[in-house]
Length: 96
Image (tube, rainbow, N blue to C red; front, side, top):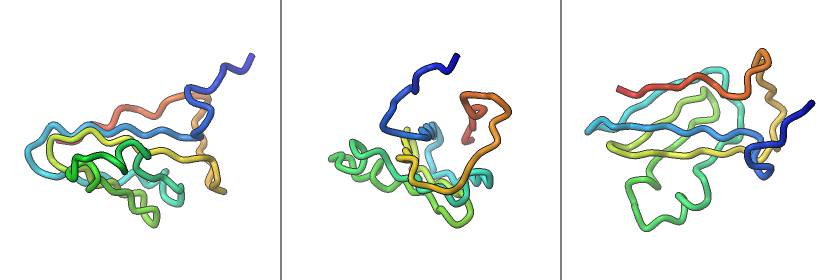
């Protein structure tokens, strides 16, 4: 049985928590090539800090400003396919 999508609008949802008082960068090479973008609600946020969260598609690098939670989404318009070994979720990525 196939379970329903968490959110049918998005193929991938990546949530990053940065509790540090400095911006953090993390590279997840498996996500390189995906067309991830900051969630539309965050893109239009009044909070300039959260709007500064970025994803570099070329190498799979996320940058998250200090004390920020960033949500990146992919609408599925990508030729990149992840081998998730049957997992529905990627492991938690901790930014220190």
